[in-house]
Image 1 (cartoon, one colour):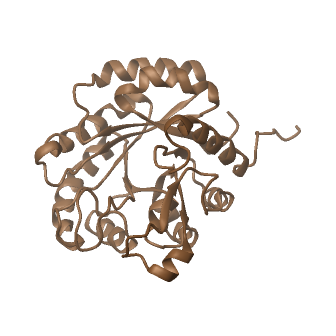
Image 2 (cartoon, helix red, strand yellow):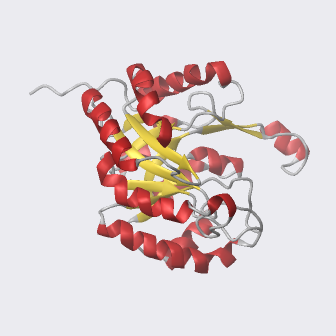
Image 3 (cartoon, one colour):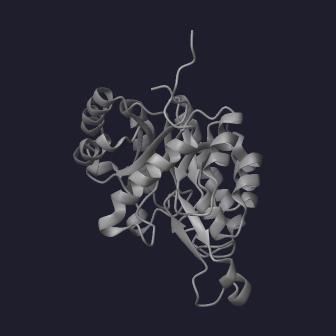
Length: 295
């Protein structure tokens, strides 16, 4: 594999052994394996063994293990989220990755600053646990329909919050899992943000957005008309060639893994059609097929 930045996609951790052999032939080069709120009854050791066999056979990599829940509350369906963070940190090496990603969690429906003390307590310990195992932690930048004052799930969706988080836990092995889409939903220009924060970006999700500026200008962002849509790369507003250029200029050696299942058009029976289009599009933005220099 000649490329420094691989292009892949996301797969459910419990479905990986079944799904990977079906979609690897389309040309995906990396996979992020995700769990929702809990790793449940998945045998991580056995799953890792079988996934590694598939990965080694096809020259693909497992880029991240993800757990998406609220580890700061530990209530209801999030009761196992914190323990799942610990399990995935411990199991990362078995999967051949050094990264675990997910939401920070949040004190529900309170301003972001009120979550910082609990964030410091929880992720101060998780960062140490991860560092002892050579693992990095990357926080997804999705607002999950929250804002500064209210919400659930996640505080890592705004650069002011990032500054507060990294000040509270000043560890080199915690950073961001970034994508332009979530910032565009807040009408933030992702390109200058990427230039500023690139050294803290550990993983990139391949998800874009389309902003309907005509609706924004006429109706604003608090009315009933939708003004932005999550898009699969190749169908949205972002210049991914610029993104890959900035990443390379700053020595990024991670992956870009497509986050599907959001596009309003390329979904349902067109889901993989859209994802494979995004895969090939991002490979072109990367420069196309690798061509070795003459000796």
